[in-house]
Length: 108
Image 1: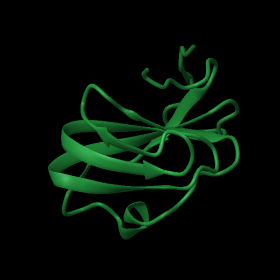
Image 2: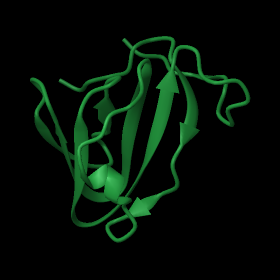
Image 3: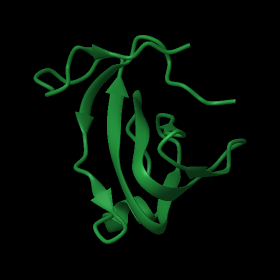
């Protein structure tokens, strides 16, 4: 089953596109999103290993399989060869003035 974001979240920020050489060290080690902040990891090409605590455990992300990051959930990513991806952040009440404000996610 493909995991989806909650309905009503708004995309408010995204990272630059990273590749296997430019992934920040902070993404390669365990980290968390802030309270109330969800994220989608969008793989543009290649494969990305997405590890997180909980029942979902480890996943291989590809272009057809984005990774859903729950608020405050410990996780990290590792490239599986050449890869390019970006992370898009979502919240019910995003900060004012966000460049992507108004992009409401239709989830299940």
